[in-house]
Length: 299
Ligand code: NAD
Image (cartoon, rainbow, N blue to C red; front, side, top):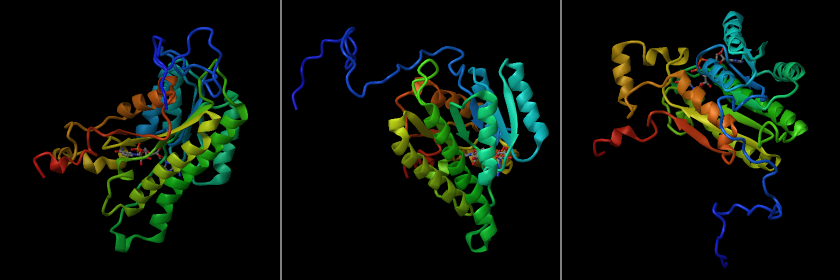
């Protein structure tokens, strides 16, 4: 393969007046501003608690109107919606169990009816039902797979249908839509006593990558965030006492627990055109938890 000398100032960029080559971007990524997500309605599942709440508020701060999904505790959902409205954005609270097909489809229909379309879907809802493997009930297994994996499938499928229906609106974003799966470091790190949870997150990782490959030609970007230990109700036992926190820090080279806003900022980046060429990636936000910290003193 021969290479001709590159005479443009930006390598690979066409000179002004050059014809647009086949397959070139129909739209250039929008420049960053404080409202990078303006005009891009978002839906966040499990948005009345922890990481989902922080993601919903971060997206709103970046300009998005937000559908706040919840399944229990409507008051908490209304509180998040109120905070979003105080930021000057629109908010819709919507009850749906993400593991139920009819409820997910009704939620997306209501979201599109209210906001016209969706550009960003964050499949965040998740739970744990921990047990030693030999004692794990089928119900514990099915509940975790149903919410953490099937729930992400159902929401991503509805998102793809809406993004494909609308197509790229280059005044809003270079992509037709962005899906962000909330995975975990346990898509990679095995977790004794939590086989159902680790299996669900490993499944999310391959769901995300297969879907990203399939819908990239539609200009739909699909990525995951893989959080490490984040201070939320799901893992209170791991950080609430000084002893537990000290134990946890043995697993975190960066020597602090993650805060929900750490994930919120990552979600804004993945949802924005700043990451327009990023698809099929797990973004680990984990203070180094996946760096095999046990080997930091020689192994
Ligand atoms: P959380 O318990 O505060 O939030 C989970 C949310 O999911 C809640 O709003 C809950 O009501 C909702 N939910 C549960 N089942 C649902 C269902 N069937 N339908 C709709 N919503 C449902 O915990 P979190 O830490 O904020 O967890 C959010 C996501 O982040 C989960 O997917 C979790 O696996 C993932 N995660 C969390 C951590 C962490 O350290 N906190 C680490 C890695 C991954």
